[in-house]
Amino acid sequence: MNDFTQLADLAAERLGGRVLEANDDFFAPRTNLLKESKPVFIEGKYTARGKWMDGWETRRRRAPGHDWCIVRLGLPGIVRGIAVDTSFFTGNYPERFSLEGCDLGRYPYRNEKKRLHAPDAPWVEILPETPLKGNMQNLFSVQNENRFTHLRLRIFPDGGVARLRVHGEAIADMTRVARGDVNLVAIENGGSPLVASDQHYGAPRNLLMPYRAKDMGDGWETKRRRGPGHDWVILKLGVPGIIHRVEVDTTHFKGNYPDSCSVDVCCVRNHIVDSTNAQTLPWEEILPKSKLKANHRHIFRGIRHTGPATHARFQIYPDGGVSRLRLFGKPELSAEADKGLERLNELPKKQAVRSFLNCCGSRQWAEQMANRRPFATQADLGAAADQCWAALLEKDWLEAFRHHPAIGGKRSEARQSSKASRWSANEQAAAQEASRETLALLAEENRDYTKKFGYIFLICAAGKSCEEILMALRRRMTNSPETELHIAAEEQRKIMRLRLEKLLAS
Image (cartoon, rainbow, N blue to C red; front, side):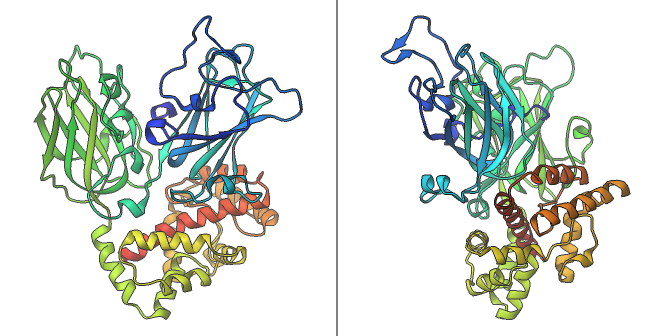
């Protein structure tokens, strides 16, 4: 959806979000920031410290500096936009704020607070110092493709914020979903709504939430249809795969549940799916029109379709409300990858090292991965890959960077095997479709980047257009060398994980 507020709040308390600490919360506690309820104002209510406020409020600052708090996201992922709500803060809201993000890897985060405050903590600027208005919901879109586990909200110089909402897309923990029965469209696995015919009473994102709906308002509900047709929503699966079971839950919907429903799927890669093309995609029906009951959890088994799905279209007839939709299945490549993992485990060490070098150009990383075999599962392989990468020295990271061609540049610019070169070409396919002028501009700015940082601009380019890559390059040019090195290393890790999947499938 173009409106980022339609996406899940990654910091929501019900999804595990938590305010870890703040330098000050004299007038109102920091825990209010993530409360699910909308802020309220109670006339005449005071505490021993002053006026009761439904938010986080610091004391009046009498010395230089600013106030801050740190939030642990309930769902690590990519932030698409934030809402800084200053409702009822009129003469006491901050003049400005800024936002930073940090990725501490997988939960549980060992030595969490110590690592967040370390001098070399990988904090990345998401939004610079930006003015705020009082007594309103301040909305800010975010253009940053990094994965974050924690955020640091700074307010200048002091004051109160009622609520913080962090809208975005979760990134699935592949060590958890690589095997077994997985809800491929779940919010926690990266599922998200793209476009819907109507959402008058309830947002489509509610369909994908992990917990049971608490009431009718916690589902997707359309207005009463007075003409022909029916309502629908199109969803992006967080984890592409083969669906074998569909669950449609109409809990709490009694006089307003849909008469029936159906589900279609399609496989669309490296293309933007939106309202302009959603209905013309090559949809395949996996659940024919089926009757529904009021206030009931329906389970449809024996679902079959011809190949992996990336998107789903959920249709209700003619209108009404549904609390949850779950699409259970096996993640794509799992069956083939199991065979690939077996082959990888059995390779002689020299061949295994060469295979791993196709995924990441660090000799040290490839040697460590070859030594850690055999891997019992794909999840174990991915976890080992991340651990080995995180433990490398800077020189090993730089060695890996040198094995990549500059985006938009010649393949001969990097030391790659033929297999790695083909993978690079596929990953950069969308970028290569740009005009000659745009590619030339990207090459020129890539050279400027290399002069500043000493290595080529690295980004996980799969599915990204040349224009998107160029925007990311320009944003990152402002980073310090320390910050940029960690961002580039994270992009290399993403590329490495994608290539491990390709390795197992080849």
